[in-house]
Image (cartoon, rainbow, N blue to C red; front, side, top):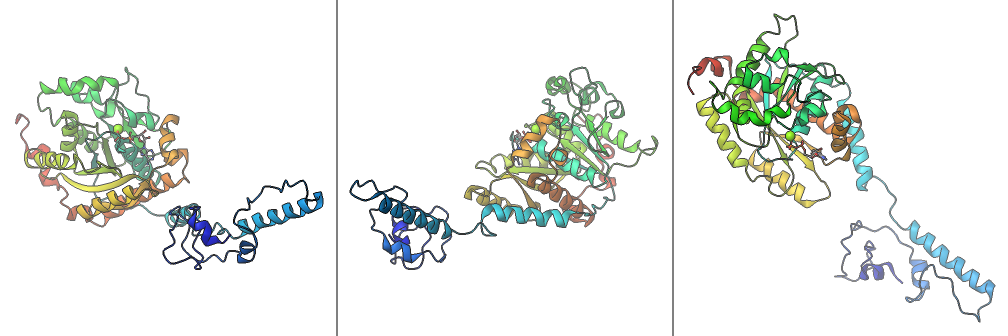
Length: 403
Ligand SMILES: Nc1ncnc2c1ncn2[C@@H]1O[C@H](COP(=O)(O)OP(=O)(O)O)[C@@H](O)[C@H]1O
Ligand SMILES: [Mg+2]
């Protein structure tokens, strides 16, 4: 049997160059290159020989049968030897090498402090695209790099609070008390025990009713912005260091809670899942951001897009990533976050992947993404994209009773 013969029967054998022109390739992922298979043994055996089955002909002496079996075994060894060695060209080895490279380049990387507190709303009205995962992991990565970071959880499900190991049962003072009862942020904020420099305003289940309760309240779209500004402005007075980043984790809707987050922020950070339907609904999101920009917060702009749950084994992921990059060339971070079991396991331990498994490829990706976010802010790329300046701050430009 020749190796090109194996290619014919669809075992995915690589073409050794001796195959007839037009011989079908298996499509099973074998490299299409010459790997010098053993022709010597390949031509010795009849095509009908079943490798690995000892001859059973009773007329053949035991010794002959054993010899033949040994010969067949050696065929198998040769067959195994002719397989490509797992080297740099295998996907796993490539991934390991790539992770090692990233770890080396990220070790000791300095994350620049922004010249003002950057407030980012992490939004996408689709559920399950990685908003919460992105919020908590980017926040943890920035904090681990020495920056002071606040996460504001405004999703009634409280997933960001869970992932940061923050107590958020029904009686805990939370963002609900801030938005609906006018409580100060300083009275509800909690420190994340696992990550120094990281703080969180938790969300409790009470928030589920807030969308309706907010409707009848004064300045319903701006309650978060006012509370947050008061808190951030008070850091010096409280003897605290200034916050470098505030990340607001939104619910999967474009209701009043998300509007409050848009009004409170300078920048919108959109995670996009590398799946079919990824771009569906994005135009609605962008339209809403434009509406907020023209009526409530002139400085609001989309500054960052992160591709999440990228699956390198599927062509679909690559196609979605390419399409998003074509549409938003200036906004999409170079880093993509792979689909990773470690990322999805971390919240069940009340942790981010940054502490749960810091050397995993998911953690490295979030660290890399956070580094890019920080570098872009420091390089003024954010300003080029239209960052809000102090003079356009919403609380100064919109009268309190305008709604
Ligand atoms: N890169 C990833 N790899 C694997 N699972 C992920 C990844 N990112 C998010 N997940 C999982 O997908 C689900 C939805 O993510 P989540 O961040 O909660 O989305 P959203 O906040 O947009 O609803 C969660 O179970 C989360 O653990
Ligand atoms: Mg979420």
